[in-house]
View 1 (cartoon, rainbow, N blue to C red):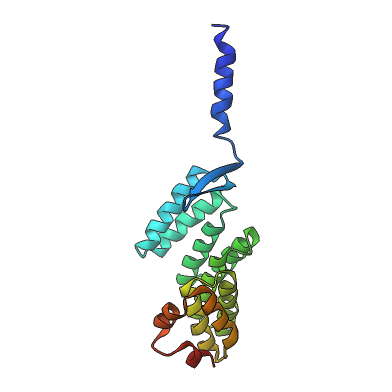
View 2 (view 1 turned 180 degrees about the horizontal axis):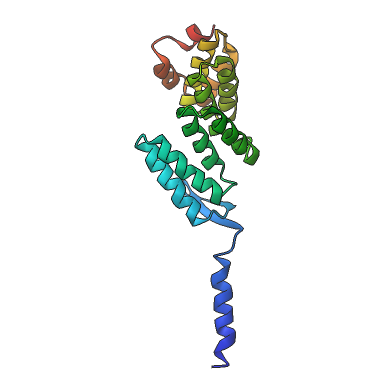
Length: 193
């Protein structure tokens, strides 16, 4: 029995390595990506929130996202989703705090600005929506929904978007046709010139 003790300790040490907080490796789009450990309770609460949100139950989604954020305060996507549903529930101060928390975790996370632009558009605050949608497009010009949001924000703010920058992004990303279809039959140059 005494000889098995070192083996048991070695086994426990190996098993506990997978249970510690720190970096883990996930496979994303077939690539190994190192990232931080996320507690299973945060995953579970986030998943329930996403399901509730998909079912159109923003109040329930908000509660699950709050639960997830209490377990994982570094979850930028958790904070972003919490902000988005809070906005749709017209809880604008809660949305503002959640967007700020998301940006504090990762200020270059594109969905923060996309969702905040959607929130500002919903409130009729076109100038702020334009600013946020421009940042969203800067961070990921290939996302058609953000490009369409930029045009909608510019139209609401009665502001001409920098047409040359728009054309450059459209050429680089190849999304101009898809974006045009999403915002209507007009050509992009008709919208921004």
